[in-house]
Amino acid sequence: MFGRCTVEYDGRAASSLGAGNRLLILKPDGTALVHTDEQRTPVNWQPPGSEHRAAVRDGRLRVRSVRENPDERLDVRFDRVEQVSALPVTGGRSVDVYGSEEDLRHRILDEPELVEPGFEPAATERATAAGPVDVFGHDDEGRPVVVELKRRRVGPDAAGQLGRYVEALARELPDGTEVRGVLVAPSVTDRAGELLAEKGLSHVPLSPPASSTTPSGDGRGSTTAPERSTDADDGAD
Amino acid sequence: MFGRCTVEYDGRAASSLGAGNRLLILKPDGTALVHTDEQRTPVNWQPPGSEHRAAVRDGRLRVRSVRENPDERLDVRFDRVEQVSALPVTGGRSVDVYGSEEDLRHRILDEPELVEPGFEPAATERATAAGPVDVFGHDDEGRPVVVELKRRRVGPDAAGQLGRYVEALARELPDGTEVRGVLVAPSVTDRAGELLAEKGLSHVPLSPPASSTTPSGDGRGSTTAPERSTDADDGAD
DNA sequence: CGTGCCAGGTGCCAT
DNA sequence: ATGGCACTTGGCACG
Image (cartoon, rainbow over all chains, first blue to last red; front, side, top):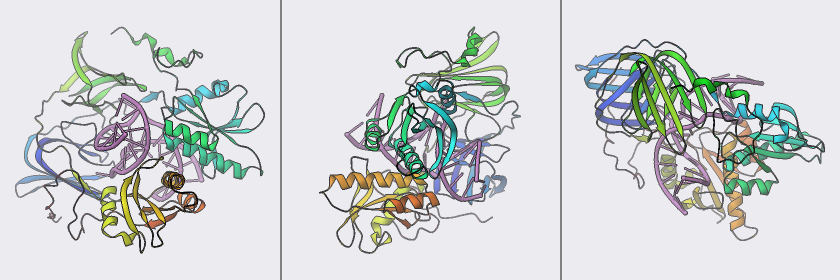
């Protein structure tokens, strides 16, 4: 729907939006989106699972979307409706994304020496008291190694996360066992680097496999070709 | 626009979406959104600042949106266009949200005893080597106190964040100075609670002021002018 | 369901 | 531009 409306939201937070022309999208799964002419993020919304209802009050259309747990409500009051469309959506709803953290994990399991020579992965998502460890394994001297993967440049939070895993494992393993921690990510910020150094953790610069040609820039050596590149025949257009 | 299309994305990651009827939204600020009939998140998109272009190839409409830094591209190829609308958006584009972390900070600055009796705030956003501290102050015995605010229930990350601030301040202040850390949030998860305990930090259960029951006026900080504050009316069911 | 964590996170604002 | 962080974060997978 498109038209002049006001929007009120109350729930996890609360907000109010004065009159203006906006686009209101109501999805059959209960999602509601109010979009203006800027930004990727809707100015107001209601998550999937909400219930939409429409009624005319004082001669004006009001669309109300409500959900519970948490209780929240979105009210869109129109004083003029410019357009209403019902659109029959079909086809795929989700995409496989290449270049994710999972792809990075596969890359490392395929070639553990990318982490360091002699590294031997033992488990993924290994449970610890501090949460699941992305890749757990041992170095060339048999020392336990915790590997935390990030698909992009990281800040201090990732260093903290890795540190928690290392500490949790150190407690879990026999007293005195030295546990190493390796952060695998394209790069780290200065602060994150300092934090890693403080905690005795290390960083291995490595990116998820490029889905298509991202040739120059990252001098991260010409490691073997990712099989992912089978979409190369797409070109043409 | 609405119609049957395929969608290809390549940039920070890469994805491919087979043919189907979807809604394509092109905003004048360069945003592009591809929505299916589910979820709040678009199945594909392009951020603001991108450039949209349309062309007919092999008798089919192709919309391409490109941006640089990072380089990324979205291609939507239609084989049938069901509807095209150009909608004149007007009016406010952003909302004042109540119940934010900032509101929680105001609440605490108004009533510091909510943190603990005798707490005296000294600064907000106080800079440290580990980042800005939400509220910095002193307790009834003059000890420095770092307060980290969260508007909702928090996990281990918040405990880590607070811990980093406390440690950074402890280093900055004269040797031996005891720095206390208080996490103000509605609640904490078990794991976060353990982490807090380990680090000698404490938790004060407190929520942002409820919007619907906000009793008295509060001078909202330095930011935008709230022109639409008085709208307490709520149409009964 | 809650907990934990990734995400093409987005968006805001500081240096 | 990069960094650090909040967000009605959203979404998923696992306990």
